[in-house]
Length: 120
Image 1: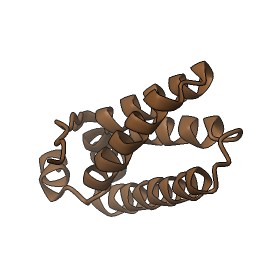
Image 2: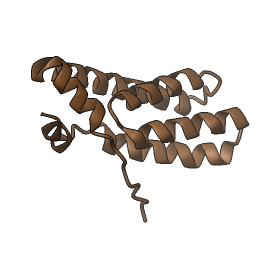
Image 3: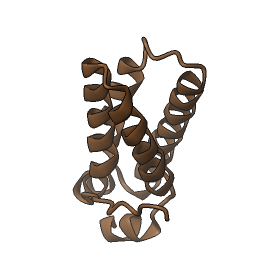
Image 4: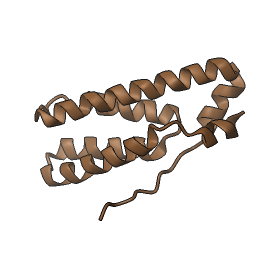
């Protein structure tokens, strides 16, 4: 059995980019931020695999901030939850929320054409 998280998104930040910058520039920014999100997740995964937990707060904060910029509410929220687990030094909760972050990130970082189409 694999849990399926309900993803929450806010189309307004993406719509605002399209309104303010035009289609070409907005798509360029969105693709760049999605790429940075993927790189941040990759770096986090490498740190967790290597059990280098002491410096996770900063990239998690970055992940949370970039997710907010694109209206990826669920991804930002789970990143914040994971930072809280780090602060509390709760290894059990960290493991559960890390697994959730991986699931949410996997689904959130796929280009959602429907979300992009709504913003034009």
